[in-house]
Image 1 (cartoon, rainbow over the protein chains, first blue to last red):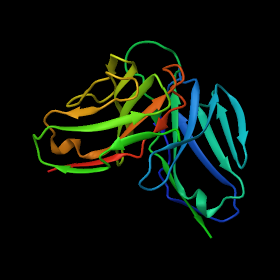
Image 2 (image 1 turned 90 degrees about the vertical axis):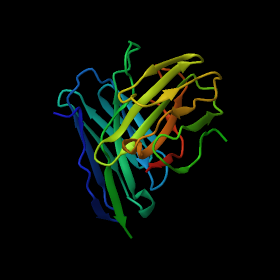
Image 3 (image 1 turned 90 degrees about the horizontal axis):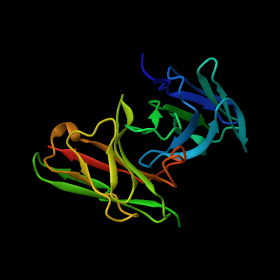
Length: 115
Length: 114
């Protein structure tokens, strides 16, 4: 079982729709949960992060973390064509132990918002 | 403008010819890392650095070297590139290791090794 699972899509929705993007994970040590947006030919850009369980809202974006189910979501309200991009979830245990400690990324969901 | 820069953005080279990809950040960040992004495999960390002169291996370090002589720069060195190192490479930085959940990524370097 891979550490982080994310449906690659593509996910195509009409402009104005509510978009739901999801990831599941297996490592119970993860404490930080991030969502990155990556436009074509660009580097990933951090949208928002959540520590532990709960919800976080930033404008049209809402991130949810359910640690009991090992499931995280990103909701986009009033979706716009400019939201068309690949969305990557990422996770981190957050401790300062030794060894490899990069973020663990999902493979990304390609989102298309149709005008 | 706060940013991470990488050079070159595109590089085509031949097997065995040493190359260096530069990375620089202007945010006074302590933590820097290199990732490679491959279709079907996602982003994987190659090396990271917690501060000047402190580097360590990530998940896929074989065939790569790094150095951190200055805080702002973190070059990635391929001593003898091979075709399996054809990939999209990203440099990233964050304020500190404990703050690495807030990483800022560079624009990427697309490397092709023939």
